Image (cartoon, rainbow, N blue to C red; front, side, top):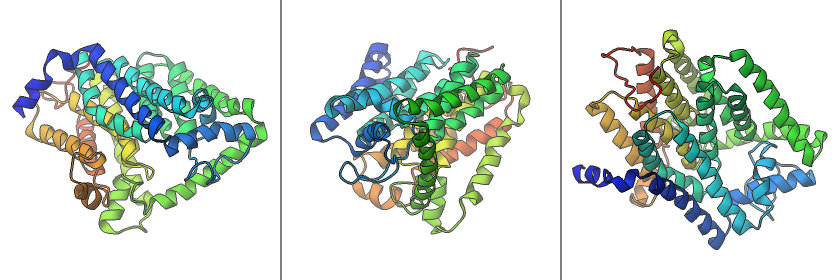
Length: 399
């Protein structure tokens, strides 16, 4: 462990140009694989959200001649993917992977933490970036929108915070968790007004390339499809990699209501806000950001391996606000989380570990769940004092 630590402490690994280049090259490599080995099915689904909107045909029906599975994204996604869908698939898929990787690259860079902390996030999240890119997924973009919301609210840019919240919501629902930072806003009335404004804009925009009737019907179809998708996720091996899935798969409790799990989780999440006097404290705020990034993955039946690009970012932020020297518990939990994350989504670990142990029981969620519970306790008992277990060592806005 000492050798590995010393190796990665070399200046090259913290050089901004090198870090940024590696981040983009990983996404570019994944895009090139799609271009030369066959465009990923997810990208084809994305592409046809645009063309199906143009043709005004059901966005949520199956089209076996074009792709397998069905679309689960909102109508506004037709415009998000449009610049890429208009290009040849080989070029579009490359640019798509690079562009959404850049969104998270920028979001992390804009966080008010010192460069050393950003470097840690970049390197640890790099594996999940690659997993997400090889599956042509949108989770990198969703993570960027959540972080972007946090940054904008801290910067009193409610107009853009509302934009990011509603865009994430209208794309994949996940963006709604940006409301977790509502209490940190100094202009709450403005934020609410902008939320209504952007909701109207994103609702209407797809009508420019289709029709009002089609868009309204698409939202009805989207709602019905999400209900079907949620039911199918219950027993899916590759989906529901969450606390919900873990409880159901380990205990064989497939009939247990989602609410039995979700309601206690929501109570714990709400309990974090008990420290009203800490709302302006940057350490506490970063704790809420970390908690939000993990919560949205841990308690969604739609979570899959790719979704953990969101959760790993939250877990690293949790680690960064821990007080030094790190306790054995914190260090051990963080290392285990990274190891299980890598083992669950790559060929580094033996296949039987992934296929027979981690995947069947959704165990990728377990270390994140423990991290999240630990963070909840730390936030509920938060104290701005020398005896606090949390620290602002990496945070730059120590007001």
